[in-house]
Image 1 (cartoon, rainbow, N blue to C red):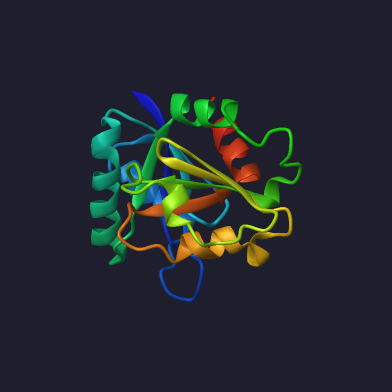
Image 2 (tube, rainbow, N blue to C red):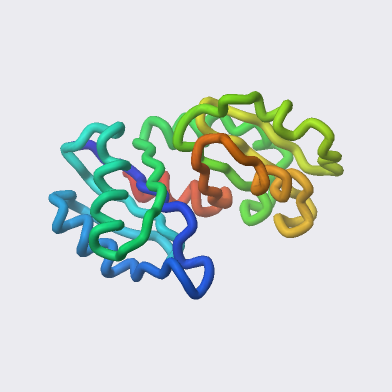
Length: 177
């Protein structure tokens, strides 16, 4: 058994695409996973599974579509992935507010470097850095005022991504222990 975090993209952010966390836990348990726990209402799941990481996301996506009728991208990380992401935080000395510091989790590496994707965007005070399948963004003036977050949300033809703030990332890492 391996311990994983599943990050569901784009659920429970509006009136549509609603999935109750109790229903999600029940579904994933019925799929054979154990120790299924959720964090918040935004599609953060920690569980134990015999499936390899590469199979877990597609398996969960199919089960969610069958049960809830929603096509949802599921991005998977294991404890080592999340621990490395936290340890390699490039903005540890600057990002003092975890609600203004985000990580975009990508389903696969970017096909174009993030600096190219953001060429022409004036980041103002925002800081960003890419790591493997993640993009860190420090938004000192808040996410809604971030030119980098706005630009990243408009990028097309790149791997699926879902964003979590640093507070959530740290809570998920703690849940993996």
